[in-house]
Image 1: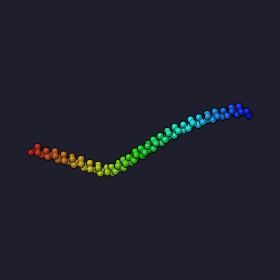
Image 2: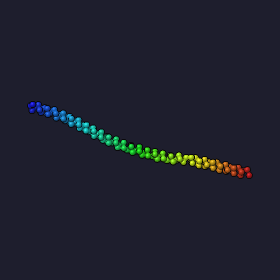
Image 3: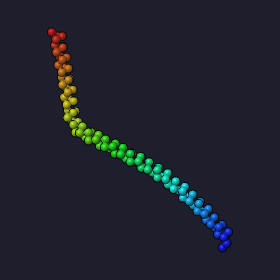
Image 4: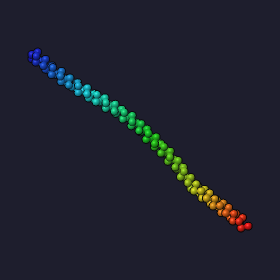
Length: 104
C-alpha cells in the first residue's frame, strides 16, 4: 500500500469514528435526559404513594370511629325515644295544667 492510500483509509476511518462518537454522544445526552425524567417520576411516585397511604390511614381511622358509633346506636336510639317521650309527657302535663287553670 502506498502512503496516499493508507492516508485515505485512515481519513475514512477517522471520519467514521467521528460519526460514531457523535452518535454515542447524542445517545448519552438522551440517556441523561431520560434518567433525569425517571428520577423526577420516581420522586413523584414516592410522594403519591405516601399521600395514598396517609389517605388510607385516615379512612381506617374513620372506619374505627364509625364502628364505635355503630356499637352505641341502639343505646342512642333508646335514649332518644325516652327523651321524646319525656318531652311529650311534660308538654301534655303542661297543657293539662293550663286547661285546669282556665277551667277554674
